Image (cartoon, rainbow, N blue to C red; front, side, top):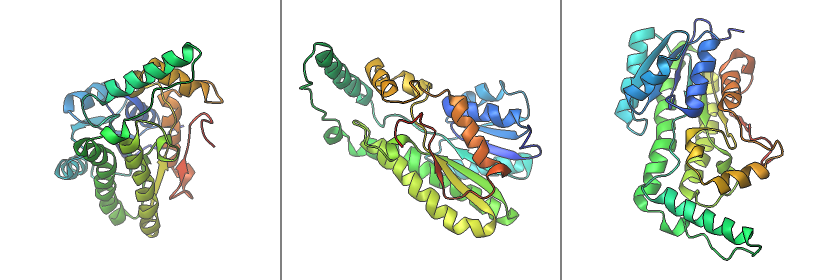
Length: 273
């Protein structure tokens, strides 16, 4: 099936994980893909893998001018952008956060393995710095806003287009050590719905995916005990392959989802319902 024959789709954060899987899926279905990541080298590493038309652009989505320049370059090369998948993201906002998260998880796991109720308490929230909170929002929420706005301006002129924003299960379910991440992802859901209410009249659809745990480099950095606990709480009993979520992104970008806008699809293995 080549649902994207003749179409151009821009994918942010395509250097790895879900973004990379989405780029592969779209090219396989006939799209010309603009592959973005933080650096051109990372974007190019994915672009050279793709069996089809692709163009790599390095840009920090947290930088408005870089995002605008990225879309201008895409237009210069292809003359149009029919779809956008906003996938770029980071797991933590500052150095040391992963280590503090891991230490707490390991302590809780050790206490439970010893048959004791955990006495270790979370203190991650009160130690999030202003800079970390702002960085998380800038990459996830501001980045999604900048890219969605730039795409919408182009698509409104064409009277058609589709945008898919990547949120997370953390946006709708509380997880420890994720206040800044969850806030950013929840903001993406609100942004998606608000944009959809305005852009639908211009023929532009805006939807979101809120995945559960995926087998990506981002999750690989998490403590094994955290991953094991999340998997155990998932009815399907496993993490998602990024390609499974990329299939949902491709569906929402395609004409098969032509009557869907403002929606959040949650491929999470049943972790929450």
